[in-house]
Length: 320
Image 1 (tube, rainbow, N blue to C red):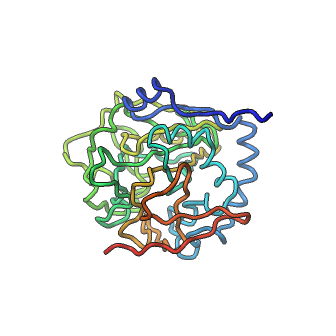
Image 2 (image 1 turned 45 degrees about the vertical axis):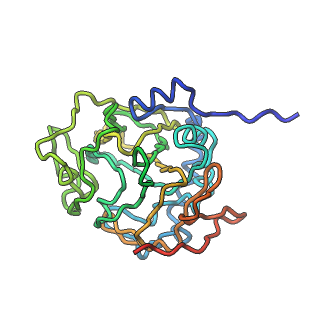
Image 3 (image 1 turned 120 degrees about the vertical axis):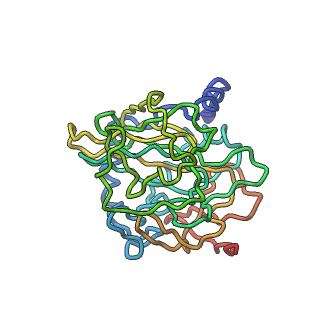
């Protein structure tokens, strides 16, 4: 007799805590030695961008390579990872039964790298160099943003640049995403704020502040130390940052973020391409992954998993 599937949905007390502080975790997903084996097998696949949805030729920049966005669409391990019930059940208990994963990103931090500056993201329009949102919630929605599931593919410590959160800051946006930040790659690893080297991959989030005199309450910050193979869940509207990599440990810190939404949210509603961090790429081969439930709205493009990866449906027309 087959055993019943385990339900990893958040308990009522966990949901209450999540809504109060804007994050919850970390949770165990892989044992450290298991994650290390997966990482060793993953590295050569990441170097091969031939099948990535954003070609290396069009997406390469000096700082961020868009060819390594959304690698869950061409790398089997990552495709499996974003649909793990340990993740999806918890995400669905927050967002509702019908969910999608619209983006994944790697966040490496090398010895000597600056920390990531404090920031929030609601509709993700600011880094795209335009006023257009990358995600658009229904008009009657009570909130925006996306659920981020950040997995420690390596150990994440204060010394090597773990995440930092300001609990409870997810309910108030301190930044105006209709403003545009200037991309300045020469500023990377050269900016100091309040005695800490902090930047944002060539951008300065202070350009988006609603109040130029405001500054984050860093005294309330909590460091998210995680062992290899754990994940944490948080709203993108939560004030979050990361410590610099001190270089005491000469190994890279690597995080992998999957971003989730209810299927009612429109993804890239006004865009047919990405332009971020000095790179450009077409969305012709982009598709969302349905991670739970069904899609009854029909305004997003989805991909279907097949034996050899994903098949891509025709992309709905881009709205003017």
